Figure 1 (cartoon, helix red, strand yellow):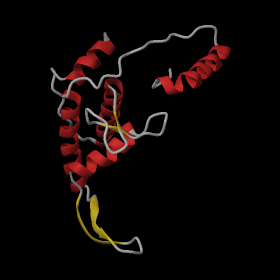
Figure 2 (figure 1 turned 30 degrees about the vertical axis):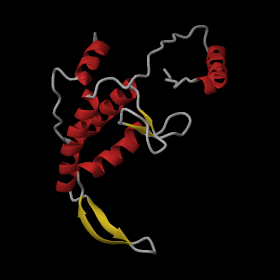
Figure 3 (figure 1 turned 90 degrees about the vertical axis):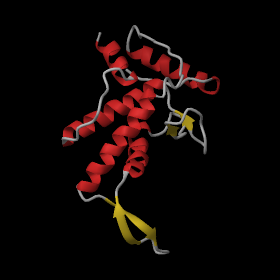
Figure 4 (figure 1 turned 90 degrees about the horizontal axis):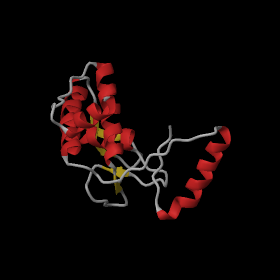
Length: 156
C-alpha cells in the first residue's frame, strides 16, 4: 500500500502512477482523507516521548558538540537533550514529503516546511514507539490520547 500526498500541482503525476499500478493488478482500493493536522494531542505526546528519549540517550552517553571549528571539527560537548531528540527523530520519522519539503509537527508551515498530516504524525509515533521498544525505552501512552484512539480504530 502506498500513500500519496495529492495536491493540484501533482495530480497528473499521481494519475500516471496509479495507471502504472493498475497495469500490474486488476483492482486498486483508493481511500482519501482530509490532510488536517488533527488535535495537538499527538504533538504533545511526541514532545513527551522526546523528553524520555533525550534522557535515555544522554544516559547511553550520547552528546552534542558545543561548537564547530572552521575545519568542521567540534569543540567541547554537552549531554543529548529533548530538543536534540526532537530534531533527530522528526527528520528520521517524518522526513520530507514527495516534493522534498520537510514535514513539521507545527500546526502551520514555517521556514519552508509544511505541517505533517494526522496520518503522518501517527506513523511517526508508531515508528518511534517501535524504535523505543526495541531498546527497552518505556514511553508514556495515555489511554485517552489521540494516538491511542487512532490505534484502537485501526485495530477494530
